[in-house]
Image (cartoon, rainbow, N blue to C red; front, top):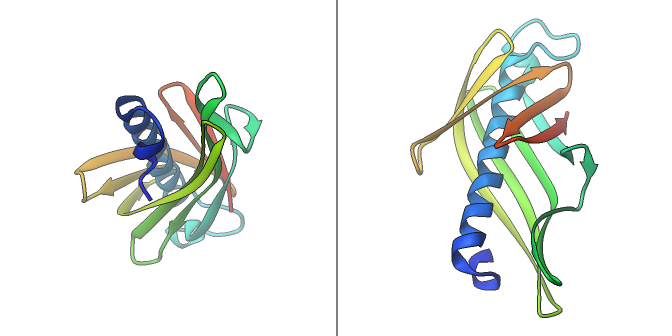
Length: 150
């Protein structure tokens, strides 16, 4: 589904791009850390679930004008052993009292260096970076802090 159909195109597209960048950063975090009792990159492999945005639980209001809004209701980043990854974000749009839910996904590859991770998205040639501590991926994008947990 196209979330752009539910909000003014310029604002919606910019907000969705920002969220996508944040999820990419989260993927990067997951690949760089030696989480839990692991000793290498394999310890970061797995699915990370979005827990908070700027310290607030989900749903999180991404954009709002009056009663119309877009909320982040869920998100995840999956890091695979072969250095491929994927991310997913679910948005709930409320426009003129009509509520729709859309989930966007993307694929990427990742590299790690100590506690740093870099996610590369071939579809639009973008890159995101981050770090990981234990089972927590923390990504900061445009001053917004996203926390994912394995």
